[in-house]
Amino acid sequence: MAHLTQAQVAHFEEQGYLVVEDLFDPEQDLHPVIFEYEGVLDRLAQDLYDKGEISSTYDDLPFGDRLTQIYAESDKVHAQYFDFSLPQKNVQADTPMWVGPAIFQLLRNEKLLDAVESLIGPEIYSNPVQHVRLKPPEHLCPINEETGHVQLGATPWHQDNGVVTPDADETDMLTVWFGLWDATIENGCLEVVPRSHREGLLQHCHATAATSRGFGRHIPDQFLRAEDRVPIPLKRGGVLFFHRLNCHCSLPNNSDNIRWSFDLRYNPTGQPTGRSPFPGFVARSRSNPASELHDPAQWANLWYETRLRLSQSENPTFNRWKVTDPACA
Ligand SMILES: O=C(O)CCC(=O)C(=O)O
Ligand SMILES: [Fe+2]
Image 1 (cartoon, helix red, strand yellow):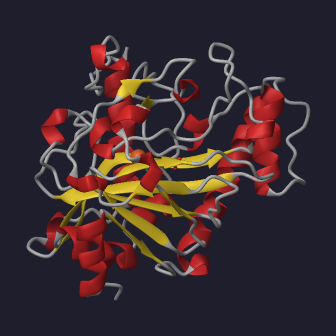
Image 2: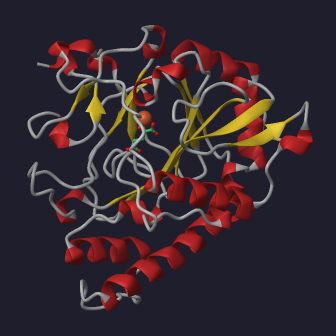
């Protein structure tokens, strides 16, 4: 059992975030995911090698170096290949993603759900806003030709409520962030602004080459209490929980190895997810245990069906911020 203490819940409510060290047993809970991703990287390497985009599959390199080398040589960050979600536009029938059984087991991890239950209650829905982030060292990362910045770098300041649709504004969405390996200040751990969850939804703007290094929707400096920022280095096994209005960003990866993290979200079942074209599932229900999804193949199928459906339809709208908003000029 890993239910949180009253003091932990109070910290979350007051500060908008909570760190729980050693929530996972790395060997038992995280290793199966790492092992599964070794196979995914094998397939990516073979794929790119067969297409002539890399000169070797680099199977003698350790995971992080291998990923970095493959990205560098193919001059592309193949993030979508590993992710267990879909892009927000231009989904094709063959858009790559990885929705393997070890990922599903981690989404359903009992220790994690116990902690989530302490924060949002016993009817727990796995929200489809979820990612794996494998960030290469910035000095070795392929460059985006349009912006002149790295293709995958530090995440700019934002609130997760700002990246979902407004129907979810009242949803009690909880973000769960953890490293598969240690996350450090050097390799790009998160930063948060304590108590920012009490200040409402802030203005977000679209990035241009000049702002946020061209990467993502972000809160411009003038709207942010950035001087109060706190970095959250996290040993593997530790988990950072935060409120949907908590302001956060990540630091750049200035190390020589990848920064590898998961971010998951959960909300009370029945509340809008804020990304309704994507599938979620009931991870835990005390009132109706039969509604829980336990089959990894069924979960994968939900994503495969969604991919097919989206490939045959117009891009849905996921974004609430106008590119031309005067507040962003
Ligand atoms: O890991 C990152 O760089 C950003 C994560 C994030 O924004 C989140 O988990 O909500
Ligand atoms: Fe976020």
